[in-house]
Each structure stands twice: as structure tokens, then as C-alpha cells.
Length: 454
Image (cartoon, rainbow, N blue to C red; front, side, top):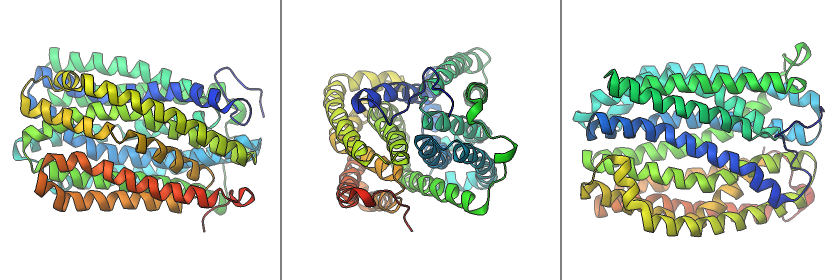
């Protein structure tokens, strides 16, 4: 293996507390900036246009998030095997895993793009999109879909870099693109008057610059890890291993997002004002959640590298450390939300109408109260994934889907938007229980932890 470069981290040695915090901080900042992509679009649109345009940008987010989540899930799965090879100091396997990951990402992205363009109008109708939002939603999402190749390139590059211990470079590339995105939003929507289409074009141009920059950095600064002629052609078993790991991660994200789409359909049925309220509330909650779930991303790399090195006791130590961190973080977030959420959601929505601000704030407050449950959920799920255990995390995601379906069918009809706010916390509680039991059972015998589910 080549000598460790600046910003790169071998997580098989040193203090787990220090490693986890230093690795997670850039990912947290990256996820916050990623959320600013969406907030930038929505804020500029709401400022220069109206609440209908704001709601249209927000409601199409569940569709784009499902596609992006599926791509990111696949590349995260590929990254687990890359990190495992890195931890094992197996350079040949590392290169071959990167090569196979790139090829599979191209195929998966092409299939998703074709399917999304064919079925997008049917999906919007299935979402029960209000008539007054349909034209705006179609205009925006069709342009956003053109940027899927850039999304795939960035996620592949970022997950490979994180797998070999570099969590900073994806952040730097993302910061540059965020600044460009917001600047182009203002120019395209505010000055040129391109409307909601301008916000969409600003997003995909910024994504393109971000993804290409991240890719170029990776292939130039980590040449020793990049595939050469002898590592470009993988055998069937190697492709199968990558695909199965990627599929398990992708399916898990897809199942969760399908549940979110079902919920969005129920939200859309409550009217345009509630759609706008949910858009504002979800924007804030997503940022707050990123302060929690990014520790899960760190645990995927931490666990995969240490699994490759055979250090199971260190994995368990990392789980305990990460759980302490997210518990303290959750308490701080709860206090912050109850103090400032009303003001923040009003700013995001560019509205002081109580029907929007009060519902958005209520949604956030209910959600953050369950963050002490959500933190361990991500840590346990990503730890199990990092040692190749796919069935239990996938089962917990199916549980989340079932809860969202039942909520959309019964709870919302009884108590309205409060039912939406309670849905995810209920599912988080059930999922964490399943994952905790699975973790205890699997890690009880350290010599049997590292294997692949059959």
C-alpha cells in the first residue's frame, strides 16, 4: 500500500473517539451543505415566485431523493468492500473493487435514468400531486433527472475516498458547488426570470462541477489505488459480491424512500398549505438529522476497515463511543429545536402564515424528541453492514416501510398532520429494537462475526 496521504485516515489504529470525531466532522459539514442545495432552490424560488413553486420543489424531493438514495446506497455498499480491502492492506483486491464499482455504477445509473423519464408523470399522479402544483413539479423534476449521472459520479467518488480514509475532499468539492448553486439560483430565477426551471438547471450545473472535481482529485492523488489494465476485468464472483453488497444497501434506502413517497401522497392529500409546511419542516429536520446519521456513515468505514484487519473488539469499542457521542448531540439538538425552530421554518418558507409555520415547527419538535433513538439506529445498522450482515438491517427497513404504509392508511385520517409527524419516530423505535437485538446476538461470539449472509 502507498504511504498515507494528508487527510487520509487508517481507522484500524489509534483512539476510536478521536478517529470517529475527526472523520465525521467533514461528513457532517458535507451533509449540511448537501441540504443547502435543496434549501437554496426552495428559498430562492419562494422569494422570487410563490408558495406553490416552493411546495412543488419540496414535494418532488421525495422522488429525486429515492433515486439519489438508491445510487448512494449502491456506492456505499461498494465502499464497504473497498474499505475492507483497505483495512486488510490488500492492494490488488482494493483496485479490483474500485474498478467493478465504477462499471456497476454506470449500468445502474443508466437503468434508473431511463425508468425515471418513462414513469415520472405516473409517479407524480400516484403521489396525489395537487393540480395547482403538477405543471411546476413536472418542469422541475425532469431537469433534475438529467443530473443523475453527476450525482452517481460524485457519490461513487466520495464513497471510495471515504473508504480509504479521506472524508475531507468530498466536503471541499461540495462547498464549491453549493456556492455556485446558490449564486446561479439567484441569477437564473431572480435576474433572468427562468422560473423553477432555472433553479433546476442551477442545481445540475453545480452538481456537475462538484462531481467532476471530486473524481479528478481521486484519480490524480490516489493513483496507487486506481485500477490498471490488470484490474479492469473482474470475474463473475467478484461482480456478484459487489452487486449483492450494493443492492442490499440500495434496497434498504429504496425501501425507506418508498415509504416516504407513500407518506408524501398522504401529505399531498392534506392540501397545498400543508405541503408547504412539510417542505419547510423537513428541510430543517434533514439538517438536524445529518448531525446524527453521519456517525452511521463513519461507522461503516470504521467497521469495514477493522473487519478487514480482523479487529472485532475495536469495532465494539467504536460502537460504544459513537453511541455516547450521538446521545449527547441529540440532547443539544432537542434544546436548539424548541428554542429556534419557529423562526427558522418561517425563514425557509419565506412565510409567516401560522398554518405553515406552526405545522412545520410541530413536525420538527416531534421528530427531534426521538433522536436519542435515531442515533443508535444508524450506528447499529451501519456496523452490521460493515461486517457484511445484510439481512437484519434490511429487515429493519422493511419494518419502517410497513409503519409508513399503516400510518398513511389509518393514522393520518384520524389525527391529520400530527400523524405524519409521529410516523417516523414510531418506526425508528421499532427499527432500533430489532437492530439492537441483532447486534447483541451477532457480536456475542467475536470469532463468528465476520461472514456474509447467505
